[in-house]
Length: 473
Image (cartoon, rainbow, N blue to C red; front, side, top):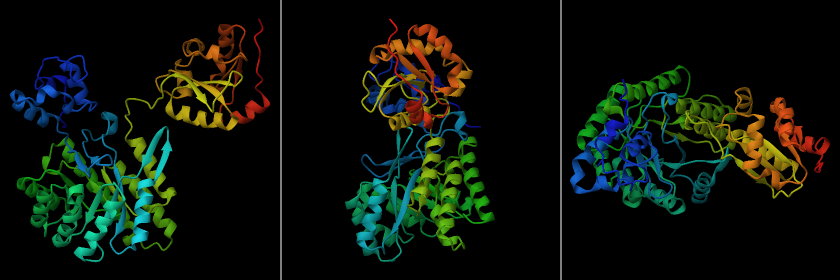
């Protein structure tokens, strides 16, 4: 069974001075947040004093996740993968979202290469207030030429701050590239049964994380990891092989699942490392001649393997319709299942509203807020009041009495909505129609409009139904 940490398990290794330098009220509060991964041990300066050296060592061992954290790259765009502490995300949460790398190779024309690298770096899609981005560049050695591979790696490094994966099984080719970009801490791909000693030396010399590859052979993968751990390497990434076609895809999913369950539930330290999947392999293995079908397969293979514990994906397609399902799936998997996505309760301005702009009310679910906000923008300017429902959706909030007339009235007073508008009207969601009469009684001389159930109908509602009212006093 996975080890379940409790605050006391961590507290006993802290200084116990309750100094507050970490920003928490006491050491027990800090220990609780350490377990939840809400703070890092670096935020406790006391523990790094020489007299606490033994406690720090024990603390780091206790806090080590069953799936080790591995950082690739340097600077602001460095990527950390792994760090998982549970098999099923509803048990706690999954930390460090799956990194997505896009492949290039050293036979590409220079202008084509730079263009693709820039596309990866600049790709961004905003959803629910979050920016969804790509993370890495995977450089494959196709030429077999060490100098050419190194020049290409250097060219990429000069044109982007994204971390790299250097892909070659030849240690001579790999070392030539590491001489050029080793200081950028790329991920070395890959140590195998045949070359692991040479690659272990390279990973140790350049202090770079190392991929361990044994396609389809989990026993060999574990044996290689044990040998590399004995060599002194601990920043490892596991590649069990990606077979995305036919029945072999089911075996791929099984391998990823067995590795993750063994690492967490059976405490197998030899395989307690991030998992790497290569959905781009579909391009070499698929017999489908329809390019659109291959791209679609790459997209769903990526989503499946991400749900089955892949911490790093190497993809080929750059089409937005291929990438967006993967990015949205990642966002959904790596939100905290214990805490609904929410915006702060309050009164929000949409397109510089004035005192005669409509006043809308909704819940503070993040998804609801951004959908309604976009539709209010389409209707013109307006005031958008978000009532605190704990991030719960509107329908659930109304049904569970977390969106009531008195809550709406109180929010209007608390956030100054009563003073912001002169027309004395408020628009509530169609799903909250039941509170309209009670809310009118509370607001006295205000008129309560029941808006559409679907926020996309807001522009039409404003044009045809809503009329500003003046005070009856």
